[in-house]
Length: 384
Ligand code: SF4
Ligand code: SF4
Image (cartoon, rainbow, N blue to C red; front, side, top):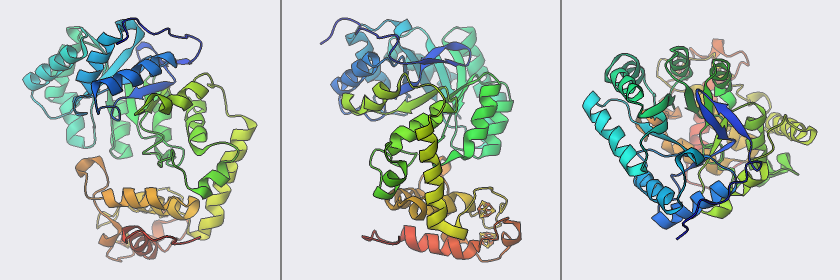
């Protein structure tokens, strides 16, 4: 057991402003993947602090995460000002339930105040209503008046219009969003939030961003001599995103945080060239069937999320990311409001979307092909 706060190399990792709170490190330790035992999270936390990370994300919904984190902070004798904590609270509870949940979080973490509290998953308009005008409004006001919470933010997996409404409400000081090199659709929302002075945290750029810890050969080829994950992190850092979550299961998985923690400048020439090669690879492999993700085809009367499904096709064919695309496609309809709920098989072929697509894509055909490719059992080689 360590009994002293590990030496924190202040210069090892850059800090960025995060809403109204203290500055956070370029990387944030996500705790979801280090929960097999208290010792695992303690080892990862110690390594993260040694790498210069000063921001940790947890949530009651992540099983024993808060308990293990509180224990690790005590074991490592970490002072509250050395590690900032973001925890979350699911929308929908009563005021009393929320008060009890927050107090339980503080007890488990061993803190008298939570630096950042995020409403966990404003994915529907009902969630936003709960937060702004329902029990959530009273709960957040109480938490801040009682100084139990430093600042309030939100995470969202919901539609862009909902995220924009949450940002525009002015209620939140930070937002946790899915922002990825290979799925940049929410970057304009991040820009809006940053312009308002909010902090922005990128959720899972490595895993949800395309399982970039194990990239397919085609993707590696386009990024060479850079690693796809390295490029993905640098793309977001150079774009000005406040902090990127890194969910390490072991200390060695903090390698990129150590290597890139000081790399907070604009894209280098080599990085820009790699991005251009990625774009070219997509164009070469998809030709005139590339979905430009403009969303002009919506709404579909059958509720088919056309851009999201064709984005998976773009990844599979454009960059050989078949495994990732299959796994995401298999999640459609399986995760409630946390993910898309209707797959490509729901297309009725009504053709209403066709005149709206500026690229004249044969959308029903592409959806049928997407379903055939991604819903079928894995095969050794499907295309390319
Ligand atoms: S053709 Fe299919 S995807 Fe297009 S609007 Fe009709 S049902 Fe929706
Ligand atoms: S309108 Fe066409 S290019 Fe734009 S998102 Fe829809 S299918 Fe893709």
